[in-house]
Image (cartoon, rainbow, N blue to C red; front, side, top):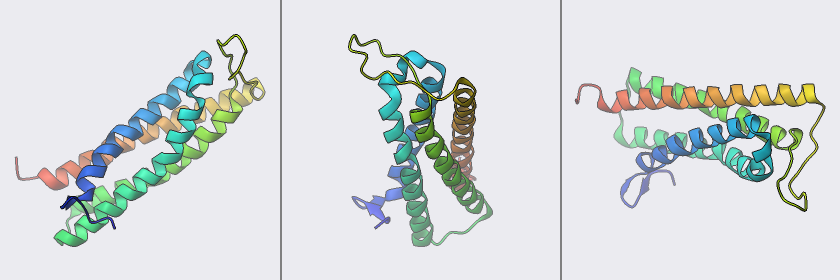
Length: 161
């Protein structure tokens, strides 16, 4: 199931989607926290994106494991890449939970005349706590994507270029 996509390794395709989508959703989360007037517009894209982040990460990991089995390579660089990917999966799950909590905990106005999309949030200290936690989780996801990708590119290109 996770072997190939049109005859090429699935991991090569899905990893690029992961490298784009995870940072994009993390940056959306930061914007959601930082700009209350955008919350009415970004709430549901954040929830949907955050829900997809752990799934995308898991599929990428499974495709990577399938590729490693197919090639039969085992090295310290691949082990580092795999362990960083597993950590990214944990971070993405925590990020998704915090993003969903933030979507319902943080309030914000709506520019629509009808007021549709506006929401009263929790008490101000709780909103600040949830916002800070989501920004920290976003930063962790961003950093871990870079570290995982770096380890993966070193595993592939070490000694080639």
